Amino acid sequence: ERADPAPGAVLLPDWLSAAEQRELVDTCRAWARPPAGMRTTVLPTGGVMSVRTVCLGWHWYPYGYARTVVDGDGEPVKPFPDELRTLARRALADAYGEGLGDVAGAPGYEPDVALVNHYPHGARMGLHRDREERIDAPVVSLSLGDTALFRLGNTETRTRPWTDLELRSGDLLVFGGPSRFAYHGVVRTLPGTADPALGLVGRLNITVRQSGLD
Ligand code: MD3
Ligand code: FE
Image 1: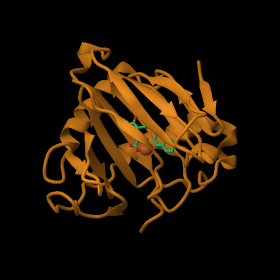
Image 2: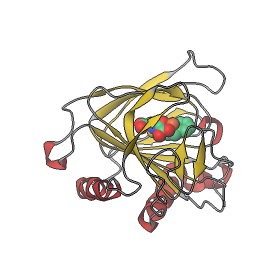
Image 3: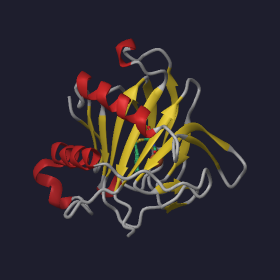
Image 4: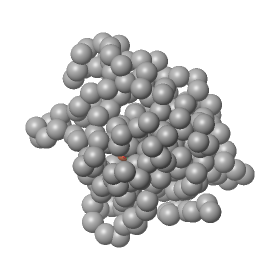
């Protein structure tokens, strides 16, 4: 049931076990607590993002990385946890296997930043490219809770062609190689699709990245 929606992009449905999902949700809850906890981001346009975000390792703001929450409470960002480094390495191995060496940035893969996004009902994420990282190591994405309608576009324009896919709780999506700097976004989430046993309202997405900063 593995799918390759675009060159370098790999979707492994149901990659996390139910127990791993529950544990990650609990851990996200701990990461979300202040200081340097979950917050809303204001864009330079004045728009407020509808997702809420907590960063680990490096603080992402529009548009750069810092060691403190420069556009929030000013506190030092929480450390990047070993468990996410281990999980992201396992993700790349499962997604690319023998082909790992062909994926730009994969040799010497040292992830050092995670963005945890919470999508309340009605939240979305407009089409964008993630360009604040200085190197082209793959991005690892884990989905928890409600299903998302995810849109993967192309590297050139914000317009078609794009591919729409559903991201469900436990799914792993890896973006490397030619897909790394493609436009992508979340069109909408499907409220009420999460397993109630997860104890999560809405959707969580964790992206693990290598910043190329030191
Ligand atoms: C494709 N998050 O945090 S994850 C983001 O579902 C972000 O919350 C979405 O876009 C979410 O920046 C999508 C999948 C993803 C993440 C990074 C990518 C896809 C990507 C980087 C390049 C290409
Ligand atoms: Fe993104």
